[in-house]
Length: 213
Image (cartoon, helix red, strand yellow):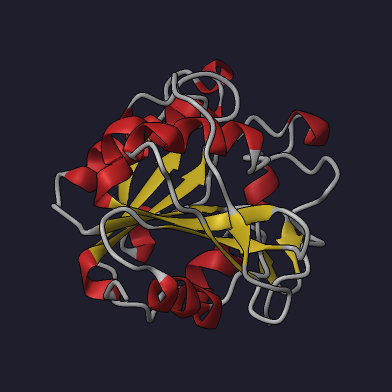
């Protein structure tokens, strides 16, 4: 178990949202509030040691929600850049783990996050949500993986590292635990090969992920 008080939240909110044209996707109304505020409200009572919001061209006011704002001035460089910027900011708070979440996933719940934290088994932990088939964000990384996350670059958070092994823990819990025989250098490739780290609305859509309510 890793305590929420020793965990930094990094909320990625700098996607280009090309499928929405010129619209600011995160401010589009969805079930009574802006799309990007659903996860913010859902996690507001979780006592993270810090909350980092990585943004680009959005009017969503994460600063007023208690987030330290990091601006991705080159969102076209891909999600890996946002990931690296967020981890850099979060690491300054010396957390035991970093939770990576996407702002366009409105069905994330605090219960889900506490289950990820409960299932983490130390510095080498990687614990992800799942749709019952493959790992999905939010995902929790223990501190042993911070250096690899800081090497993230390009489209889907790719880091220069080898493959990771994963074992699925079953659809009832919707949690995947990932163990690394080769150490923390495996985390980046897992982001690319096992987790479709996307902030767009291509299939499977973040709006339809069957994660906990």
